[in-house]
Length: 351
Image (cartoon, rainbow, N blue to C red):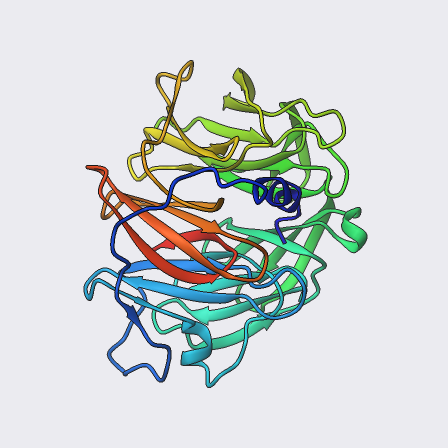
């Protein structure tokens, strides 16, 4: 679960940060048996965590060719099966999509084109994110028991078995660059202020000090790694966005309001993140100044994504912990449309 967001959500629901959008909603395809022709490799997978207490996460899919939204894809394809509690993230590697399910302590493996279930990876505790090392190996970050015994775990993708592990302080998102793994250390239920750098054998090689409660990471067009730290819930400071070049943090910009959801656009030239309930844009070659997105949306922003193929920004918003989300799709010219998506839409996987 995105536990660092629940504190924010409680505050943000006291007041709506944005005005309602007046654009028409996207036509939605009713869930049901999918035709044999339907595939899921030319659009956007929409990741919905599911209700905070109980229930299951879901996957929706926006089909570019048909200009339509297909709801609850996984269950429709797999005879009503559910994914499990808190769908934290989805990663596509080769012919498979890996659904990281936090509370259910597993990764569901499905065919990336058809979404048909293939296997389940177990031996995990509170898994968060998955990155590929190559076509046969991946690393998953997990918070461990009681969110205090964080680890990186290496997985053989052929056998679906965990083969190695190393202790890390509440690892969140990761970036693989060259032969190194850069890991955001959030501290789990505590706090950490660093990025650790590991070899593919998981051995820690170095650490880079950044802001407090480090959560999100992306890589830009120049190969620089950007790190977002959400700030301390205890001292209400330490939020920042930092750039790492050649293993060193060479720029940091202080932020406020427990920022979250750092992503990069399709060109790798612009970063997007949420600060004080607003979506901000930062040009990677003009890091001193950011810009607030000029768009009318409603609700608490819970997830961002970017479709480089269509040059569109996706913004997942939610009114609370248990209602359907509204996803706003903003085009390059500023036009917006709305999609009604699953509960707690937290991220988007572009195909």
